[in-house]
Length: 304
Image 1: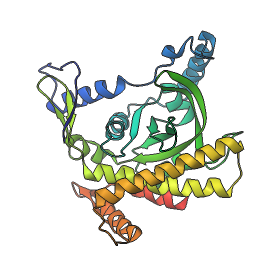
Image 2 (image 1 turned 135 degrees about the vertical axis):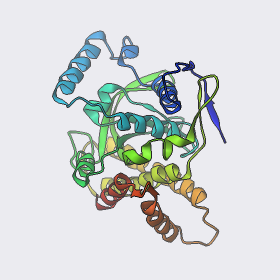
Image 3 (image 1 turned 60 degrees about the vertical axis):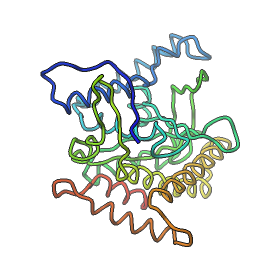
Image 4 (image 1 turned 120 degrees about the vertical axis):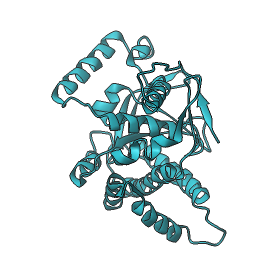
């Protein structure tokens, strides 16, 4: 199935086909990024509140190295698109987090999973990773190893959250790590399944390998985090119970999606098949190279 997003065409003859594709994808996904300026005047989001957040962000950016991380940005757009259009995790909507929540709270993507017993979605965050060194991937995970005030272990905080007109600061949001090595992000693998239309819009053919990457990471991490939250009383009790419920919902949704994606037959052992597919996924190669980032994410997911 091919889905389209209509955006302004890129007709400059000096751009390559892949460059035009990347710009169209960027335009489509960045259009939904949460912007703090749009929160002014709603609830407790005063101009002073936003100005303070912008100062915090500026200070943080001044201590970071110049990004120049083209693969990281491209990964954010690809993974957000795959999550936000129902093609990977049914019932999930996704949009890029504000720059503040990206740099301050370690959340690149805000996800809203439809609840089976409430009109309010289960909210969780995703931190996109393209690092290939084990220590760099480990650093992503260790960020959530300890509770912070009333924010439970493995969770974070979204300062700028919006859903259908409702705005709020969200505490205790489960935070998961997904990603892929730069070689897999580029045109030789995942980008290859995005297509530039004649009118300049971008369309996408779902990639089973990308879907398995996302779903397996979410399934394992939500399972382990739910168990941690139940065994460790950290942070605010109400926030912790909500986070645990969200983890269980993500685990269930990702498990169902994996069941269909893998093609498990009635009577088959789910975990046995999942382990077989995990081994296959780690053997997948592009130009002779495996996805080391994904392999390290799986290793850290199981360790944590």
